[in-house]
Image 1 (cartoon, rainbow, N blue to C red):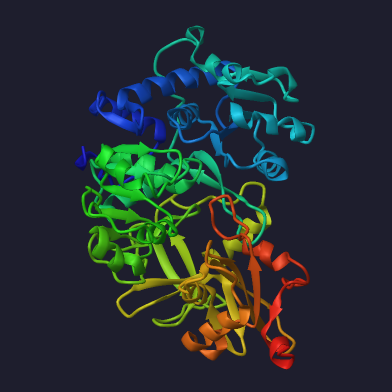
Image 2 (image 1 turned 90 degrees about the vertical axis):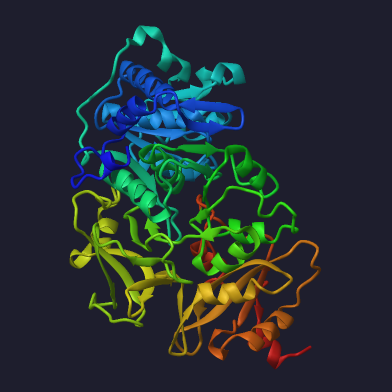
Length: 540
């Protein structure tokens, strides 16, 4: 099985074909695992065909865009493969979207059919009249949930109609190629409105295939508490399990209290994670069962957390440079990790470089923007759907510009510094917001924080940090926080401004939406912003 996937071409990298092949090899083995039971490879294959025939009966065909707004469940997996077999384009939608954000995704992706779970259907009427291209809403469990199908502002049908026998039977094969568009995946929009990255079949599957090698996860169970509408869970999780002949254990969301019990229940060896999960688990009270589990690796975990994670839980933290637009661009061979590094260049797929603002290549130790050129066809996004200026900007000078600032060492290991927008320029110094935030987050009264650059009266920028106080920690004096920073940080990194907030704004993928912080008040400063320099002038 493993050897059969080691191909030099991408011809077979088509979602529907890979599922068919794996279902023949592993028909009765579990592919999807849930707390209430398993779904075999063969069952997913058969259901995907039935749903594809049902969608075709409703007019869905090659090149059509279909929104999928479902929680973590078997049906979202069935639909991804059903659409792929028709040559249709899936548009996964965050289940928290509503109002203008939901309308933005549906409108800018040219979604013509929307498959939505019943609890979210009531969001459609308020935006229906501003979605002239949306022709049909398909509601999952609508009747059982009492959804008023005639009041959604668009024609609507039950999703159960997709499985009707009158839709026919047999295998569905629309002759899809690896170069065909499989999905439009919306980026989190940390620097503005989210954009739809166009994803060929080859991009999704090469990302999944590469994660198998970087994490040594062939034939293993992957635990996935991340949402399947996001590329990390869908590609590195579900598709990686498919390619590797393993299984994926899917839960609705991350829960620190249930995490280790789930891992034991599913005998999971790899966890799909976001950076915030590991500190949360490390902050849980110690337990005699901390090492009583089969887990081997967290992905993606910060490599800087590898040592505390290994010391307490006996688990490795694996970091690569991965994005929706490019899959895995850098990563370390399994076990050859370096603290703080996201690995070496994935030379089979990409030319990788670090460049300055004029796209001149920089040497080791010099920070700049990470840029990529593909060595294989369709392993990179083909652009942002309908956003041609943004596409041209990202692909300028024959490089794909990631928008991320990195540096590499003499051995070719890359180190992520920050989003380019998060690099604060203060008095001639380039300051990493990530480094600043990491230090402030160690303060015992701080739950989390976000640093941004704001205009300075002198030159460059001043630093503002928005801080969420840890529950039960009591009031936090901004002056005390600054004194803490002065003890631990270079003078250039000590913030001038402090804002105490109840919560930080988030993007759909749980990143801090710093563009919203920059838009607050006047250039990011509000009436409640504490100013260190003003306080020093007027101590009272």
